[in-house]
Image: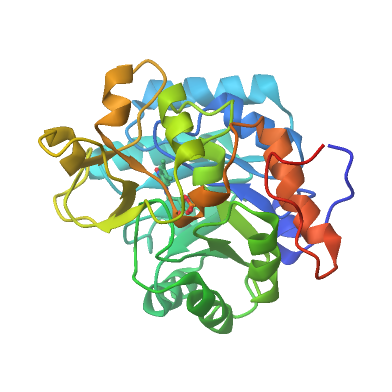
Length: 317
Ligand SMILES: Cc1cc2nc3c(=O)[nH]c(=O)nc-3n(C[C@H](O)[C@H](O)[C@H](O)COP(=O)(O)O)c2cc1C
């Protein structure tokens, strides 16, 4: 991408040009997506949760074959300690620019990541969790507002959470996460003190994502009111783990009780039935665009510098 970058503490730490970070999304954030985002000067991320270790190693190699730019690997404390340790060891050995962590106690993990010269990022959903991540030695925090898609850590809205996390971050860069699909919101996040944005749903809808085409279409069609905060069943997670998803259709359809992210290769019929992870920013996703175009639009919001809102995604000449 030939647009000039916007340097922040987050871009400097990660050696990238644009403060746009693609969230690690289990099953969805594949090498093609991560590489496409990194090629634009943002930071792409592989989603390692539930990947068999050999598959993670393969995805890292595939990403490196597609880009020589920095990228990250996302790890979630699910699947048992042995599996987490196995994936962590592979991730550290691969020396990506960053490893992002979600849902767990990472006090013993962060020093190992940092000792390998890798940026340790922790996604938090509350001020208490941010304080803990700082105490554990995280280099960078991701403040996840309750607007976000997928699994949720807290119940605070992004508008309140970002400045509060910045205040306890001790000068570490803080990324804003949750419902960021539009250049106006990117600008708002930076105005709140964020050093960048961490976006999931908008990249799940990207052409390179591993989301099933019917899932991407659902994201394009959905409006802001549709994603719901839920505490029921979600695929591969303990009962009751909070998450945000667009409810599946059909009153007697049992799949609608389950939150999930449908992948390429999954059965198309499930797309209308399963409850699909999505953040409250879906209303501003109007097309399934290449990742480079998504980054360009988000970055254009940073460069505008005027009060006139940029035109909505996908409606520009
Ligand atoms: C389909 C999907 C899968 C996700 N999977 C993960 C994951 O594996 N690890 C993780 O740290 N966060 C995951 N998240 C949450 C993101 O890190 C981030 O908080 C969220 O996407 C931000 O909100 P947004 O979706 O509105 O952009 C996921 C989000 C989505 C939408």
